Image (cartoon, rainbow, N blue to C red; front, side, top):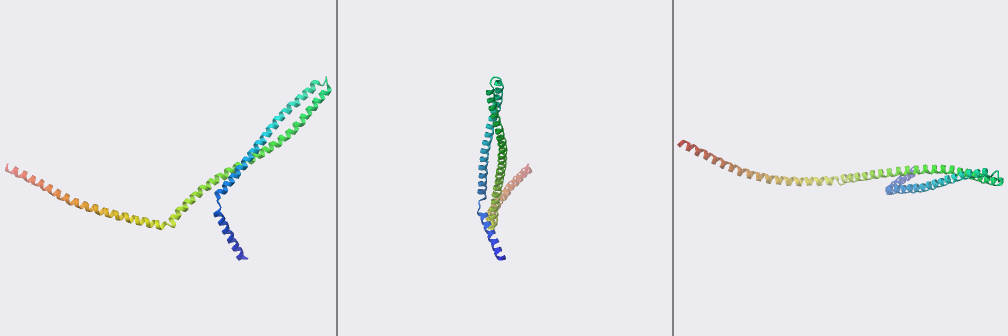
Length: 220
């Protein structure tokens, strides 16, 4: 059993590693971001609908409250002349009152639903922002890791070849520099030889001129 468990564990680890290598993490995260955006859009549409329904209910509530006051005033105005009409006005007033209570209950439910949807939108936005930020960070880390892996690969597997190439290159340049240096040195020696002869002739001419001047002074 122990051997079987070890084999199973090894195979599971190998499969997990293979799946991890094959899996396109960036694509998986992009799908998650897309799902979050879809959920956010759906929640925002629902929130707008709930908000619009609440505004319509508030408008209807205001109308009913005005109608309630109107029917009450009408009942008062005709009570002495026409009791039956006054009773009908009160009946209409009570209907408005019942509808007002019903709408107030609906408004209370809509407000709770609106708060719930708003909280859901805030959570989705936070999650979307966090996932997007983390994805961008992971992309940067992945790019840096790939760059370092490439550099290490060059310095590792091909490092010796590169060093040997640089060494051969340096030797070639050194040989060329040595040859050029020898030629320059030969040219300098030849130039030096000519300069020495020219200087010697100049000095001899100058000495001859001095001796000639000395003889002239002696004769005088």
